[in-house]
Image (cartoon, rainbow, N blue to C red; front, top):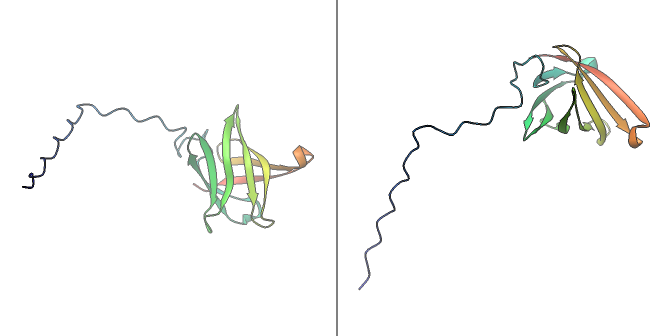
Length: 124
């Protein structure tokens, strides 16, 4: 004889109050946040900055290529790596808001011996 299949276990009760979601690092509409879309210097393209875990990442709007890599908050700026699509290289980087619609982006090579910067403007 084959035993009949066991009945499914009862569904877990639904909690009356859902657990609160963790607050986002900053909303895209927050003027003190770099989240959003930015136009690079010389209009070479737009970069969409969004949360990636506790850090920030930036992606090319056109190609989806990751430009800003794991930017960690550090005081009034974020530090991490920046990808240069034209050279294919990654550099140490910092980004810092200079007002609501201006983002200072800096990349450094050779442990900070050679640095270059751009000023990006907020698109949205």
